[in-house]
Amino acid sequence: MLSTLLVGFDGSPQSRVALDQAILLGHRFRSRIVVVHVTQADFFGSADAQDEAGHLLTEAADLVRGAGLSVETALRRGSVEEELRAFSRDADLLVVGRIGRLTTDDVLGPDTRELIARSITPLLVCGASTSPMDRCAVAFDGEATSNQALAFAARYAEIAEAQLEVIHVSDDEMSGRAVLARASGALSVSPLRFETHLETGDVHEAVSDAVERLRCNALFVGAHRSEGRWLVPSHTEAILRATDIPVLIHNQPQGTGARISSASHRRTSH
Image 1 (cartoon, one colour):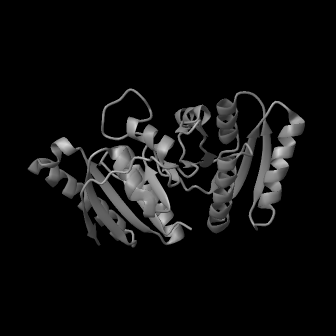
Image 2 (cartoon, helix red, strand yellow):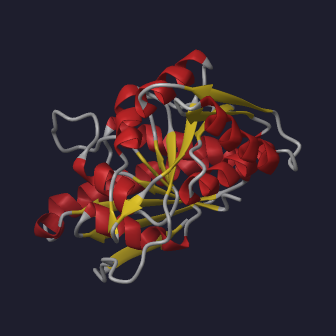
């Protein structure tokens, strides 16, 4: 299921958590881990910048190899968001931290926000510490990406032998129960442990409260798009701000016109 994990690594504390989270998942799914460091084009020609990038990638590769997993590293230059999106096309999961090395007052860095909105590859935005990801929740609204997130979460939970909590938010009990019944029907064909929960109120607050109440340590969500443009769903971003657990975001395939960078890169197998 997760044969290749791509990790965005810039040496920041949160990117180190992302690497540790990928290693944990790598053990669970016997994954190959690809570690990518993106250097801004303006500084790529600097010997100091290249030395630092090389050191970071060597350090990351040593950690993965020391954990007994296959690792590959890549150095790219340009926009972090564009390069990671382009490089992740052959990966099963893109793993990043909530914020990188750039100083910001926001709990979500600008590159992470762009990846949340635009990544075609399922995106795991990690918390402040590594999570066992063995009690998972899925925020389910019955729409296309939510169904994809549910299917992804079910496969994950079955392989990882994790508990799955399905959360739907609706102030209409009858329609809410109907949505959860569809989720139950889809999950009943799999030998996994799951429960459904109907919550009321504001979506992101209700999901965040349910995640805390149920003591979930991972959340799966589906992202939305509107009028041909990618948007960060307000509830998804709000959940990321309100929780400190890994959030796995599943997007619809992006149509034509997606920005794919052709910047040169250096890649090393280990």
